[in-house]
Image (tube, rainbow, N blue to C red):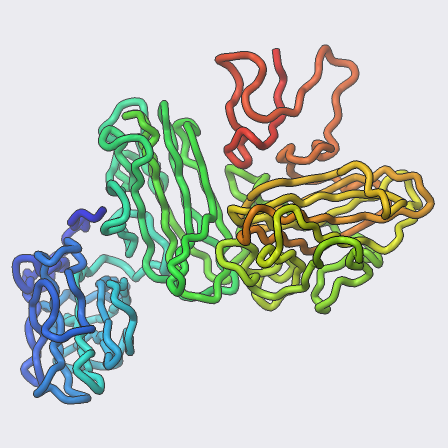
Length: 583
């Protein structure tokens, strides 16, 4: 749900005009160039041509809101230009950031150019976009520097047909150079983030100091740690439980590996959910990337999310109403580090496992980068086989988008394809024969179980392949959108034994299970620098034999009412594990 909101500190121009304009009342001092071929037009609703131009403005998101556009129907011809010129801005040697929203929809679309005009001279193009960009408003920004007074100029260059109406709206000039795309501290505005126009129930709001409700929300922002700094939040004194507010980023380019980070605040009785999705602009699929639930205390926390996609995308931050007026959720200081690998989450290190320690390579170590399964083999007595794969699997809404080794679509992994199979059919992968030279053998691997119909992944170790024996490690149902680290300590005294991965098909096609970076080594597993207590071996931690009682590994509530957690911290669910002591 979208509400009109300026929220930008107003800066005066040299001639006294405005540095913010939504065109709702007038042109705000922007004028037509007298030396071009045709004019920009202030308009509301649709333009005069079908299948081109916006249907509503950006400010209000309705047919009552105004924007400026160029009508390219006859007598306008290909190559004709229309320029809209700002009031004169004062010199800025350090730079100011021109931010705006533009709309370029139509299969005969031309080009928008942006200039900083000095003494009547347009100079070089500072920003440009061409061709059909879809029937959506998009965010643009460009830094303008000048040692003398200057004007910002929007130039529309007509394409080769009438379906080429282009539009601009919500123009602002912000002090300082433009931030990187995805960065925002919310001190001046929302930096291209915007509230969803129609598909949610209420909005994120920009505020400083405390929220309107007591005993919830932050009292300071994260950026400045003062009550003068700004952040975004959802106000829970309005709405009902389950209502959602969506904050949507600008359109972002494909990435082979980037890190999205932000700070969040979830304090108060009855706090709901904070979810983050990556929206694929090509398929409109919402891919879950992170979820946090419940009261986290009156503290700002950081979260980091790895991003890999071959398509343009947007980030969607969802705040869900918890059903109580003391359930405000806030965010601050978003950033996208292009080409960077996320470091460990400051608040949840267990969700980002560290790389496996370097070990001598063995015949059962396999990252599948040679396009085969190394010394492993398919079980000839099961129902179907594991496949070597690059990029996405064959089904939507399940499976990884990249391998774990390289973290991109060029890397290889193996997976079981759930399409065309039936419930409980099995695919097994068998190691080369193992002869333990030490008491233990350590198996380490990465697994991916994302999809609403995920079945089961089991691991066995046995000398007799005709009788698999007891399951030594298992996961069932959807686990995570990202790759997850798994580890198993095998104690098998047989002369020769085998490790078996078994994937069991779930109840429908969105159930692809994947494996990557298998490693088998003699001896105990190396100690981990983190522990989320999801594994039975509790990461090598042991009970002290000289104390009075023991810690217990549990999930869900503890045995005593009105004390202890209801969910673990790693996944925020009652199905996962945590360490506790029951007094």
